[in-house]
Image 1 (tube, rainbow, N blue to C red):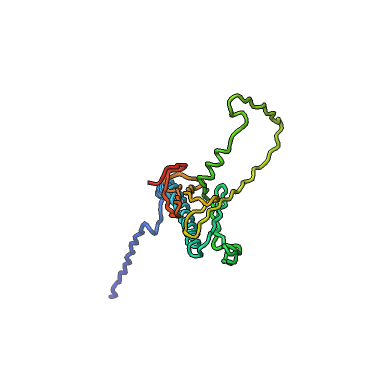
Image 2: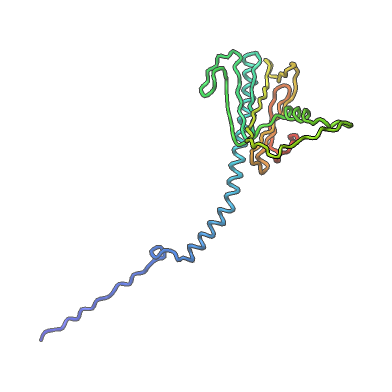
Length: 227
């Protein structure tokens, strides 16, 4: 008698992990909402940080240019000039070679050092005060009636071009600030980011008559003295 062999097969049970089946639509929407909230919170802070760093970098650059000009004047035992070109949202500075023989890479021959920056405005306090005192209109004085001004009904539209201003600061052979009348006088600069919004995007730079340079941060448009 032949025996009967019974063969049984056992099916394997496979488990599917979350990683294998992916995310559901609801889970993806929750993740995207969280990411959007984080970006909305982080982007303004990131922008502020970038503006802070840019303004701080330009402040250090300005201090370096001033100190370099002073040290060259003392080292060469002669007057050395630093010329600033001021524009709206940009500024540049060059240190002139008294002998006009320097040939520094990246600068025009005759310049000991040069730099330029954008994204911030540099204002010279004494220059701004002088311009404000000169501003005025005929008729401001008591008893003078201004003549009426005829207004053209069809004015010609003109795109205003930004005008650059220059300012020169000189150090004598002792490292003191030398004015046009050879008098020693302090000077103050204000360096502010063009989109200033915070306590670290405006700097006040003070130069004493003896050439010492210091700086501090201020609130936007503030002219307070450094503490």
